[in-house]
Image 1 (cartoon, rainbow, N blue to C red):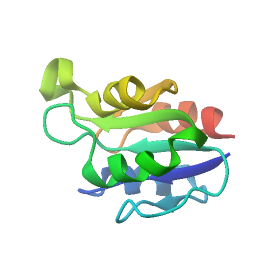
Image 2: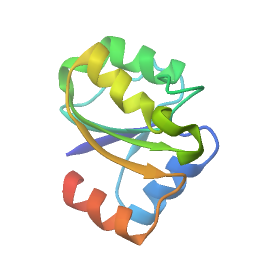
Image 3: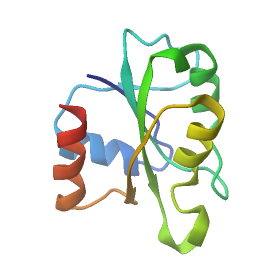
Length: 115
């Protein structure tokens, strides 16, 4: 399964490194998905979809098979809110949430989802 990701502070990029998988970074949102994909994204603001992810999904959501999100539990109910917002706006499945750059348990769970 193809993996596309967005990372602003480096947490998601760190997770991609821990996973040891090939993944394409969403930089501008103008990228074109090469087949079906899983998205791994950070959460912006108070549970918002990052702008570059929203732009990317506006053109590629038909290929989206699931969303994995990073967040900070300090935001309470907005924790990983980007995943919830993406599911509401574009459909798909909310697959998994992890805090900041995740831990070993998160890595193992995500590897099972993307393989």
